[in-house]
Structures are given as structure tokens and as C-alpha cells.
Amino acid sequence: MCKKLFLFVLAFSCTTILYAQHCYVFIGSYNSDKTKPGIYVYEMDTISGNLKEVFILKNILNPSFLTVSPDGKYLYACTETKTPNAGSVSSFEIDTKNGTLQFINSQKSMGENPVYVSVSNNGRWLINANYTGGSASVFPLQKDGSTSPAVQAIDYDDSSVNKIRQEHSHIHSAVFSPDGNYAFFPDLGADKIRMYKVDTLNLQPLQPAPDAFIKTLPGSGPRHICFHPYKPIAYCTEEMGGAVSVYNFKNGRLNRTQRCYTHTKYRKSNFVTADLHPSPDGKFLYVSNRGTENNIAIFSIQRNGKLKSIGYDSTYGNYPRNFAITPDGKFLIVANQVSGNMVVFKRNITTGLLYKTDVDVKIDNPSCVKIRQY
Image 1 (cartoon, one colour):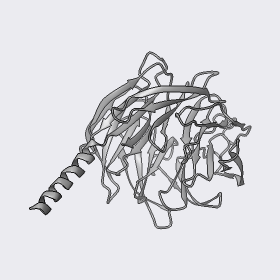
Image 2: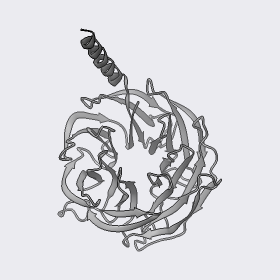
Image 3: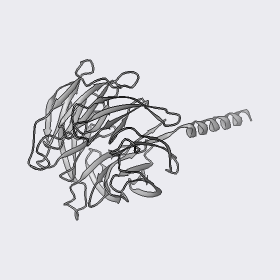
């Protein structure tokens, strides 16, 4: 009896711990007016996928891209994006018990139209991509989550073959390698992925890498880059080329091994490829296509990291700018910017396919989704 009682208590305790956890969904938007909601926080039911609004933040302009610190305590946002002669990065403290956000401080982004921020694994540095300004910047992070003024601001003066969209550099994302030793900045305007060695002991951590950049195909417009969860493989979307390229990554160097179209063979004029994420188990890669198709392209990841197309799923909205996968891999949430809705999909972890749930939340101009479980 004592043994059975112990097992019952243990099972009850584990269930209590499981349901005591919070899974928060943080959503950034283009609000264009500080009196309107800017950042939304929802609590997600990890069994049904239902979303419950728990907090809305106002008094901040166009918080278009978000990231959560590795320790889960702070949220960082690109702010004042698409605002002429402006641009900033802002920090917030997360109350992990109720999902509320408390503004900490803000710093100038050192370039116009910041569109992407990432935090280093050790929580010491924040890197930022300024799209219109064609630059990258680095900010020290303090123990209280605040950002100090930028210690590096690197401007690029480059261009490529499309004279309308590639008249000069447009840095579209800023990402650390999984080990934190390198930083990558896809440059849509120059058809380059720029690379730096990260020296955490240096007051200016971005130092020359073995290769300063790798060229992508002319007119491809590299946008977002991500890494495989456990293989030395990188994937980069090409917004203008409508493709995703696969790279082997070793010693600070990228070597392209494959390039795949992300849209159907019937829609090769739909060159508006956007976001990408691998599944937590590293078996599948998902890529969003905006515009004509408005879908998620699904690829299986082979043993060598290369991709095999296995299908497409509608996002049930217009212009899927960004999406995220829950840490357990069970759900995928899409932000449809133009139609103004967030759609939750159930994900088959065996086949990789997506199935729409009944969860479809109206939000004005959602532009970024981040998920964190506490």
C-alpha cells in the first residue's frame, strides 16, 4: 500500500508541475500608433492549442520583431520600425507567472528600420539588423535585462542586380551560431550572407571571420537564416528568389550544398519567401511563402541535412510573415500580417504535416511570433 501511495503521490505531483507550467506566446505587430496595442501575450493550452489573451502592451511604436532571452526573463523588440529617421531596440521584463511585460529601456538601433534581433547564448550581447539603413549593430546586455548603447555599428555600402530592390545593402536578419562563436547577417540588397567571429571578451565582439561573406545567387535576396538543432547545417531563405539554400557549416565557413524552391511548380512567380524554422527534433523544415500562395512549405530533412519537399499547407490568411513552433513540436502558429489573424496548426510529429485547429485569433498586423514555456 505504501508503494502504491508513493506512486500515486508522485504521479499527482508530476501532473501538478506539468499544468503549473505556462506556455506564453508573444506577438509583435505593426501598430503605427502608440495608442494602439503593440505587443500581445497569450497563454497557450499545450494540449488543445487554445490561446487565451493575458496581456496587451501599448505606448510603443511598430514592435515588428521579438526575441526572448535564453533564460526566459526578458523580451527584446525592434521598435520604431518603418519610421523615417528613427529606429530603436527595446527591452522588457517578463513576469513568468502571469505573462505581463514591464518596459525596461530603449536604445537607438544605429540604423533605420530595425527588423531582427537575437541574443547570445550567454545573455551578454544583442545583435540587430537594420534593413533600410543597411547596417548591423551590437548592444551589451546588463544583468537587469537592460540594453546599453551600441558598441558596434557596421554600415554596408553594396548592391546587386535588381536596381529597384537591391540599390544598396538591406540587412534582413541577425543570428548567432548555435555555439555562439559566430554571427550571421543575410544581406538582401547585396546577395550576401555576412559572417563574423564573436569574441565575447572584446568590447567590440564582432571580429573578422575566416570568410567575410558568402555570395548567394544574383537577385536571390537572402532573408532569414537558421541552424539545424544538432547538425552543422544552416538554412537560409531567399525572399526574391523564392527558395531556401542549404549550407554545411564548419569553422566559420558556409558551403552551399543545395537550393530548393519553396513554392509550388505552378507559382514560380511568387518570389516572396519569408520565415523558416526546423522542427525541434530536426526532422523537418518549414518555410512561409507570402503573397500569391500564402502557405507553409514543408520539407523533410535528410541525414546529410539536405531537403526533400513533402507538401504545402495554406496559412488561412494573407501574408504569413512569421511563424513559430512550440518547444514540444506539437503546434505551429502562423502570423498572417495583412489579413490580421493568428492561426494555430496541430503538427504531426511523425509525418511533419500540418492540420488546422479551430484556433484563429484576430490581431491587427501581426508580424512576429515567439513561444516560451516556463
